[in-house]
Length: 302
Image (tube, rainbow, N blue to C red):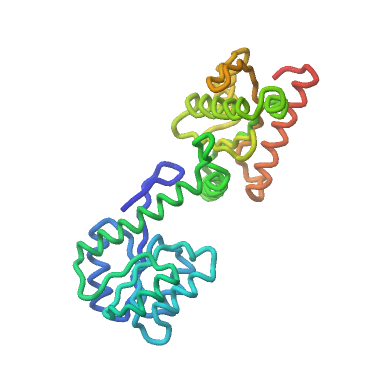
């Protein structure tokens, strides 16, 4: 099973197989590898914990009956860390007792499969667990009002792009934009119209910029946009194309029949080695956005 990362590259899902039986480990490693997964194995509970904490796999197939640290203890330890608590776990066990199942489900295990098992059934259960996790991750990273990725998704992708740029000298631009006088829009036209303006701005930004550009709602009336492989000139041209579709236009809110005009301000920062971390780059784009906003209020050029 594979997914796309922020650059559109294909990334394999990683499954950690933890079982003290070498025959089971080898069988699952060969089968899951042939199914398109990246497979990591562990011989006991201690090794499973070490690899889970370091690798952060997408799914763990976990034997319950292992020496020293058993599967139930492993799951309990995983739950203690926010970074591993959400990893789906399927118990693979030869002991089909109700007590173990109840304890496992109380710990938040996703599924059970009993030895001896069908490889096809195991693959189906693994795929279902991964799909459920991806679905809930997408919900948690999507803004309900605009449908754009939210601040959680932005932070994850911003860190990814920043680290890629630092390691491989692959430049990108960051744009911070927000709607001018948004409080006034809400005060004078109600929040229904304000929500309409947010959705309209989101739609224009998303449909004007490239498919490879990531438009997110950072919060309130603010947007954070990542433009891969772009310099400042390219980012400015991209934003100006969106502004042309907004400036001087009147939009009708169908829910209230109100007609509303609005504008946006933005600031651009382009990755360079001078930034120690993402914070500095974000602050520069944010500062430039507020500078442009201040210039507008003074009657300066956009």
